[in-house]
Length: 505
Image 1 (tube, one colour):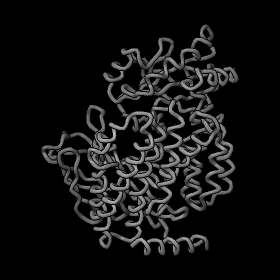
Image 2 (cartoon, rainbow, N blue to C red):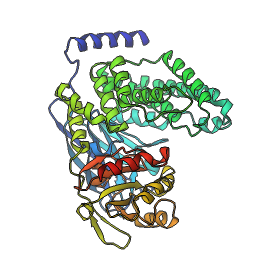
Image 3 (cartoon, one colour):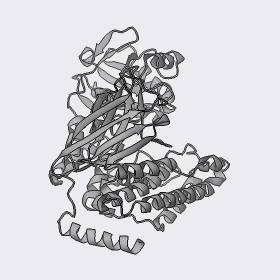
Image 4 (cartoon, rainbow, N blue to C red):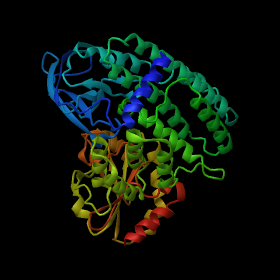
């Protein structure tokens, strides 16, 4: 099987370099039909909405600004029917229920959160939604959905794996911890591959290959991200040694990691995994004994150009723009736009530039404060706006107010700068809880909220593609965007952010 797959990759590569696409994902559009019912044990009520979020091809599924939502009312019999246009022959979707109280419950929910499902134009699916969101898929195209749900149910590592790893929590155990985590990752990947092999001749060849790369990308993306987000930053040498061993072992893995395969790029997870690996290596590459997460964007571009080509090179570059969001990246993005072919990735890049280019108008929000008074973007024009997005329960968000304190004090007594806090909790009560705790805001901030829509529903959050928190946004006196990636005051005690704001006055 392995030799056959390698041969297939060589054939794909040959046609790619000839400039002839082996398969187009832009066939004439069709429709996707989803109908079904919720069992009595499922926690939904008539009047709730069945929701399908369709993700734009090649965009990461967490990028809320690159998805389109469709809804159908759940009727008195707890049934629903939804027919939606499929703009591409293959695409990823996420299924959810929007409740009357404003909360959203994702149905395709794995051990690590909500997960996308690969669907096709022409699918006509009959869904029976059981307790805990488990879905029984029937109808045309259901085979691939059943396969993916079984893959999702395995999660990241075997059940109990992370709990067992918790015994390796000392600094001296970093290397052993990630060796064992890699072992668990490989074991889980083998289990997923076994499931996928059961469907080998029951799925179209291209869908089988895409799901193969989904498995690889999901497993290794989570592995690299867990290392990058490790909280034990002070034990740098131990972490660097563990990282070198991790990279060495993953380079020697039996799983195929192509650098150009179009189907790998189409996968919901594969490009993200390669991005996580590149970001991780760059953060540990700088001399000295510190993790440098604020590495120059040019370093990332150089790494991509050196190691990856074709669609994967474009996709990784796009991931750098969106995920790293460094101020200097807009210059590279505009240059890339002129050289990229007219394909879906170029369309995504053009959309990102339109929202992040300096001197473009900021989103014209209209948001309530705690007393219900509406505040609009134009109300703050004439001042530099320092906007902090947060939600109650966010661990990192608790550290932003104290980090902003030196910045707020620097501009105290001036009416040229305004500090705005925007909460993104679904429920107003949850916002009140966080606000009154004193952990997330400062008295000097104007406190606003997007409550009622959820973290992926409000157009303000979609416009800036905000999918991680806390998030800072700087808007100038004319109401133009300055940057969604200002210097993080949690890193430098606010000195970089103070300089940026001063430069705008």
